[in-house]
Structure formats: C-alpha cells, structure tokens
Length: 240
Image 1 (cartoon, rainbow, N blue to C red):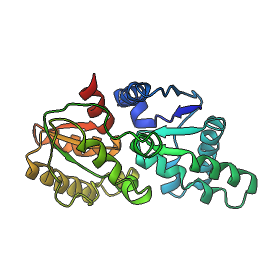
Image 2: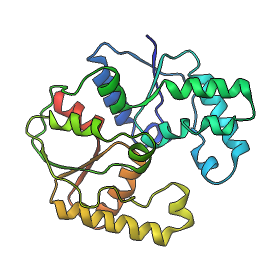
Image 3: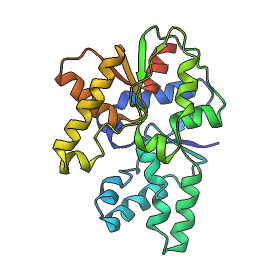
C-alpha cells in the first residue's frame, strides 16, 4: 500500500511540524508516508478567484504527483476539499476527468484516514489541558469531517474538552477573502477569538493551519495566552 503525504503550502512553508507529527503518528501504525517532491499548490487561490485555467495547470500537477498512490493524506480539510473540485475543472476533458475522480476517491484529510481507514480512535495520548476545537468550514461542510476529531480527542487521557460557542461560524480567513475584504475578515476573526476566550481554554485545536494561523494571529495580537495547535500536533505531543 502506497500512502502519500500531500503537505499543502502552509504546512510546508510555515508549519512543517504538522507534517512531522502526521508522519510520526502514522508510522506507529505501520504506515510509511511517501512524499512526491513535484507536488505544488492545490490551486485553490486561483480557483476561488476565477482563474480556472491556472487552477487546471496546478491541479494537473497534483494529479500527476499522486497518480501511483493508493491513498493521499493531507493535514488540511481546505486543500483536500479543493481536490474534490477537480472534477469540475475537467468536466470537458474525459481523460483528465477520470484521473481527477480517481484522485478524489483516494484523498483523505488526516483524521478521516486515521479513524475511517485505519480504524484508530485511541492513539494512547495524554494531554492534561483544557481544549476547545474550531471546525474549519471546508473540512466540516465540504468533506463532512465532524465526528472523527471528536472521537480522537475523547480518547486522550486528561484532556478536558470545552465546546466552542458558535463553533460552526467561519473564522474569516477564506484565503483571498481576507485580502479582498479585510475589514469584514478582521471582524469575523475578532468574534471567533472572543468565543475562544469565553471557553477559558488553554489550547485551541483544529484541522487546518490556515484557519488556525488566522485565529492564532488575532489571539496573539490581543495578548491572549491560548496555545494554537493542529490536532496531529496535539496527538503526537501526547504520545511522544
């Protein structure tokens, strides 16, 4: 079984520790992650901005990169969700459409793969802290990732989970949205941070570093002592 890591731009360039945590956690279950070095951006910024020609070019690179993989695992619901848009990009190209559908069927967000494919909910972690969770829009709405992170956190010894008020609300990042409509984006992330503060949690956890970067930046700006972590980081810290 060839399982490949789709690291995504943010994790590769800014948060490599997330990929490292994934690799080390999955190795405990006999999964060795391959890393095709030709992989690039998933094309989401171009796609969301209406530049579909450019999005097709990057999508083709991703399809080529993972052609021989049995599974493709990513630490981002957003970028995994973009792969689910690839068939739309190639609906007028039967050959590429078939390849896009094949990639879509074998691509999973990290917790989806861990829980639904490997059948793992208890990694043996201990994390004695008060934790709240932000469900990123693309992961929860597009991919339907809802129960998997809850199942994993429920098995972590010592973890006190506190529900995030209005958790389903967007954090305001949205990639190019944060640039084009910065005032609205800023108001949204401030509201999200207010809700995080309400929980009195020590740690905010999520599945997408773009959203966590946005919320974490706002919390740091306000000098709020909340640690921000990807769930893979939390689980790995809890077992190492």
